[in-house]
Amino acid sequence: LTEDIILALDFGGTKRAAGITRVGSYGWESIRSLAVPPGADASTDLRLMYTLAGELLDGRTPAAVGVSFGGPVDFEAGLVRLSHHVPGWESTQLRQILSENFNAPAAVDNDANSATLGEYRLGAGRDCRSMIYITVSTGVGAGWVLDGRVWRGRDSMAGEIGHTSLDPNGPICLCGKRGCLERYASGPYIVEDVRRELSDEPDQGQVLRSLAEGDINSLNARIVAEAAAAGDSLASARLRQAAWALGTAIGNCANLMNPDRFVLGGGVTGAGDAFWAEIRKQARRTSLPQVNFEIRPASLGGQSPLWGAVLLAEELLR
Amino acid sequence: LTEDIILALDFGGTKRAAGITRVGSYGWESIRSLAVPPGADASTDLRLMYTLAGELLDGRTPAAVGVSFGGPVDFEAGLVRLSHHVPGWESTQLRQILSENFNAPAAVDNDANSATLGEYRLGAGRDCRSMIYITVSTGVGAGWVLDGRVWRGRDSMAGEIGHTSLDPNGPICLCGKRGCLERYASGPYIVEDVRRELSDEPDQGQVLRSLAEGDINSLNARIVAEAAAAGDSLASARLRQAAWALGTAIGNCANLMNPDRFVLGGGVTGAGDAFWAEIRKQARRTSLPQVNFEIRPASLGGQSPLWGAVLLAEELLR
Image (cartoon, rainbow over all chains, first blue to last red; front, top):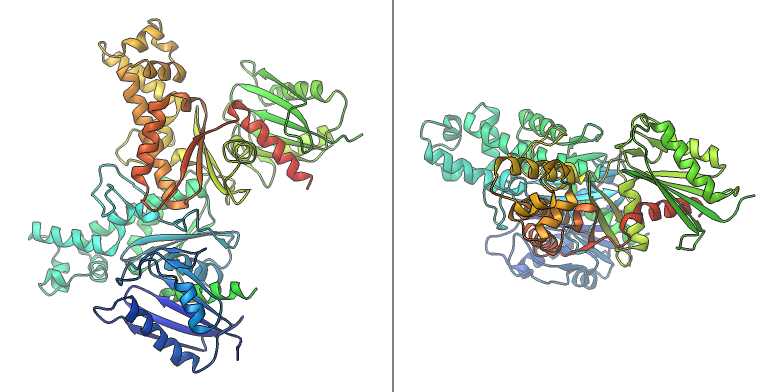
């Protein structure tokens, strides 16, 4: 029997989350998440999600299933190209698999687009026409909404703001280019650079060293942010560089697209007021005086992809 | 008596052009243009356009009037913010003025958006869903169409690709920033740089010097392009730099927006095959491997803004 419930699934970086809502009600009936075990492949990953979903559904059939996936997805085809986090997902017809498993229509989008939809309809973008959502985490990605519609582009690749080049003489990015936004602003690169500077300059970064308890391999982006907030000059300088890059990319994007609002989410954006002030200053400096916009933090936190998945499913029922 | 004719007006850089078409027929019934006289202000500019239009209309009333204007326009308000070419246009309610003068509904947009619409419906963008048009001339501007609709942005400022920054250590642009696309690729800056290099390096640029007949003040972008095509190394190097900047901006934009096609128009794009090859190479190098796009020359030439004006007017009749 089909109930008027929606099943939302989030294949994130380290966690699998599932939630159930009633159609048209934006509160969770129930929600559940689990860490992905080390060594998981696509098959164990999917089974883990089925376990979560099974507990929530308790024998009921959902009216629709929405999915946020951490990796490139061909939205039109319902096809996962690959996972950024778990091996074995290459070219998986996830929409079809889920639709058959749950006996319900399904929609699958990448996590940046899902989070964008969630923030636009239910979060920090609720009262605007056009919005760009940027997630600054292990990678830097974006999604954009124009007049209520997520724009995915020719190859479902729109939003790769992380690989816009900001400096032809900048440091080399994994993609092979120099000076990409992601090279400056993503968590792993921030940590990599900070570790190198700590090794090179034994007198610098005392707060960082003490937060790392002497083991600089234990550093992560959250600790770098904490150290900056506590006045560590090495950590602060590195985060200023990340903020410069984010502000420049936002200002360039504002000139090109002139959206109402930029919404920023992801772990690195928790780096404090000085970080946000620097982003806003550099974005304003980069954009033309006649180009107006706001920059706001995401308001659904880690749940924006899962809420986006709910909304993706709802679109199937219209 | 209202006839089923459309009046299209183009307030360009150096010329005023007007044309008349039958609704739904994409051939000119008649078309006329005049050079703007030196010392013109907004009032003489408008009278000049009325003269052209009066000759074409010959007493008839158009069903609608469409306008392409060379300067920032608030499309929703029908308001010209200023002209890039003629003083005195600041904050002019051009839509209202024309609507009253011609006793017909009118629509006014900036020249980049008009040319975009023209190329998308009738020119090099006819068979695609999403297209970015870039004009490379005295300035560098862009317009974009997504699923048949021109996207103008919050402040009608979308498309300012000329002021996206490509290099924080690049040369200073009039806007105050460093390394803007316009600083590398617009005609006046190309000419300015080439003149300086000719002064600084008396042994370089022999072809350029001979084309300029010894007077480097007579150089313009067209002559620089000719010199490059004839093998002048100084001219070629400067155009390679412009092509690098265009290719980088296009590649960044492709990553961000993933459109089907880029269409390039404006005088500087006549700089020959090597110039186009360099643009395509750098755009491909800047964009991610999964991001596909084409780069094509505009096909309506100098008439793309005027055709766009026809289409703007037609939208009023739907």
